[in-house]
Image 1: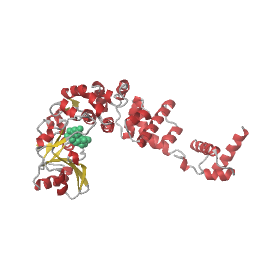
Image 2: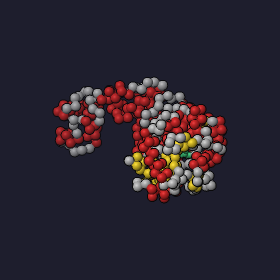
Image 3: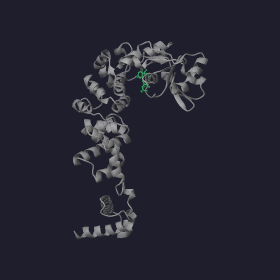
Image 4: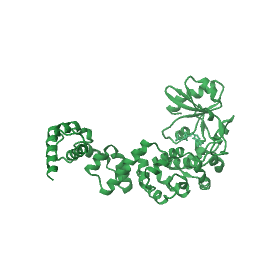
Length: 398
Ligand SMILES: Nc1ccn([C@@H]2O[C@H](COP(=O)(O)OP(=O)(O)OP(=O)(O)O)[C@@H](O)[C@H]2O)c(=O)n1
């Protein structure tokens, strides 16, 4: 009995078949279905060519025509429908490689990366598994389809995919696959950093991250990742952490903290600037908290929205329990959570002191902010005015 997501997608297969084409569910969704894991996107492989797919379905987007992929949208859900194909080897890594359409499902499955990803399912829920993928799932084994050297030469990113599947599923690498990664790891240098970063992020977020990082070290694959060649010891440290990150910012910030990455190194991974900014805030907070040995009123205030990420990283690094709820409660109980919540603003102070704006104003606001935060004065306009005047007098007397 197929699950609901496949039932919904059945109409795509049935429509293609009505038009005289072959069509099957393939890829990660079939693998995850057999593992009884939540399904991601559903992919369909078909004998129909992209133009035919586009003429059959009313709502399509040509997302990768050159690779034979058309996105079909039905009842608000999108499906990737890809013509049976095989990919060529890279003749020259600077140029996109050729993709050839093939006539059978078998040939299509044969060019896929791992046996567990080379399983197809027809409209009746029958499994088509010419390369032993279901057995590999049972054995919890990641095994390339056919010759590992060929599969990794077709697309070196597959070596990173192997390790991210280790991290997500807890599976092992077959000896043949591991040996090939050791032998061909250097090919990763030709792969776009953005693609590597996508897989690496999934690896960092997986429940079996430690196992994957150990393999990254054992196979020497880490040597071909941006800025990591000299970080073996730090990676080994990362592999000792057991808390599974709940968010990508947390995952990258923890990684960056452990391997001592800063802006320069993070940029080499071609992460978006706004994301790097978030990671850097977490890094600053972690250094700050480490120097103080624990959270304080000031750090809670300064890093408020980032508390969950930072606390979980702090706890992971110290092999400690995270106290996210407790800290959020402490944060919520602060007299203010940001400057906007102050009951007085710059204009109020300009009027009060009958002075022109200048650096004194920023210092004054900062002093008031600290005083409110540390409960030296209540956050009420009149009281703050009074406090500001006294504070000014005190400073003048000095
Ligand atoms: N470098 C790659 C990428 C993908 N594939 C094949 O294309 C399918 C779909 O790829 P993708 O959606 O990237 O990954 P999934 O395996 O579906 O995994 P997930 O959805 O968990 O990312 C894979 O299952 C695999 O059969 C491949 O052979 N080689």
